[in-house]
Length: 401
Image 1 (cartoon, helix red, strand yellow):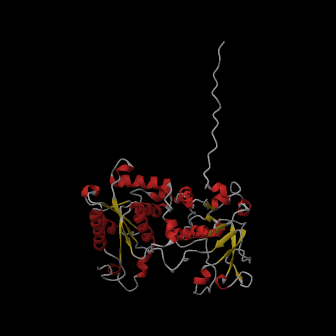
Image 2: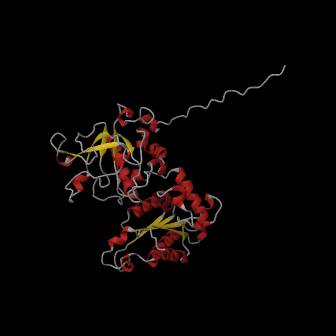
Image 3: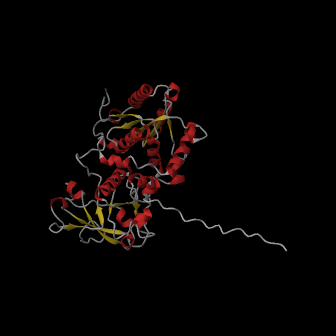
């Protein structure tokens, strides 16, 4: 008699959830109403943005920091495409940064709005869920809007209609007026379980601007926000092609540069651009300082040879890039003749990947007064133990030293 063999049942074991997995901070999968997915025994905090990729990153750092201070669970929104055009979709925070790694480092769950609420769209939908928030912007905004909450494009895309409590720094919610920038123009008190703010970019602990200070507690959060594995894989692939190597282990150590020109050109006023913006020779001098410091602090590193140099910039003038190439420096060409990054991955990815490249440098040279440069500089210092410099600009001889 012939016996037919039948394979044993191949049941896939359920994944083992870590103690800080996002699912431990919600009732279940995303729900139509955010309120239906919040655990009654927990409290949460969120906020909104609209200041460009790096400034929004800094805002989200502040949300997580306040979550730590207040023993709440942070709910981080997606990045808003304020700097690339609102016809683009949002990009989830967790597509850019490694949220599970962050949660492990902080020893607490970290949520994104997509963990809490479903049907998050790219444009405002017809149905919006009300949420009462506090406004920080009203305390800073002394312009023509007269101390109102900061507008943002995220609330509609998240299916929310926000109401704001204004003047909160001067009193309590019982005796202060309400104001709303939400699409329904409604009034409501701030929510107790989900603490919500309009714009936390400007908050600080001691001084108005302290991101460059060693004590800054926000940087203790930011330094734990490493890039998502997929972002690193894409960046490594591009660097392998730029440096003509076969594996990511073969990518040579390099000095990364960030030159911000775009909107900074508008800050030059009456100063001609050639006198206002730092020349490549000025930047090269700063690069040499980094080369010299690395040679002194790491004798024999890279076989004693100078490190390669990788340029990142928002400059669009092809002649300028030709001059970069003539210095023997490298760069990732995001255009159609190069990586064609936008066509492959979307409009978000050129600036996102540039920030990854910048963080990978053994040394870094950045643009003074640029938050993108500031964050990259601190990453290179903390993650790579690298040597760093900024170059000054704005008038002739600004970087003389």
